[in-house]
Length: 254
Image (cartoon, rainbow, N blue to C red; front, side, top):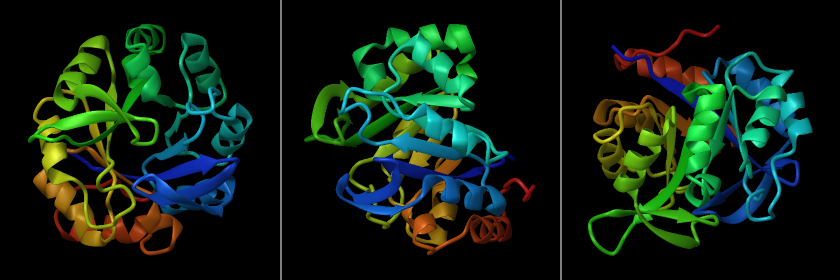
């Protein structure tokens, strides 16, 4: 059976971990290096560090912060925030990231996916997608913190990025973001049925049952969460113990 991953996400703004609801009401939570060390000790399978304002401010994530975090952890490390060139990928990977996730930059320049995959391997290229329900029974790709409708159909976008060489998808439901009432199962199933590459579920986790639900009802390979970890609602260890009891394979604590 597929071993599922539990991934904490550090949303960072102005050098601090922050969290909001539906991309609004952003509040400061704490120091990213301290959180990274803590989640590493908890046995997280991977860590995502996402500079939420980098693209909007036309800059890239702070690579010195990336370097400092990478030196404190032993788990795989994915970063996101304003990387829009092959050189940017190279610099991020040299700073200690194992993967680079691109979102708005992928929409603006899809060729970047294939360039980065060719240069650094598909396993280094993650495409982050923020999506929400459209006016009909479809899902639409959004940018700008969920404020800009690209007009791209989610499923067609998934097909495209896959054909260009993306190695993984991180699918975030804007409708569910920070609400803590569960992952968007319908959206995830639509994407997982189309994608032939791993899909990370993001947005909406609030309790233990949401982890078992997303893994039992979808083919998502990983579950990403933020609020439940940052605010001490759950620990990685608790989640993994629970999933094991539910018969869902997870990696043992290193």
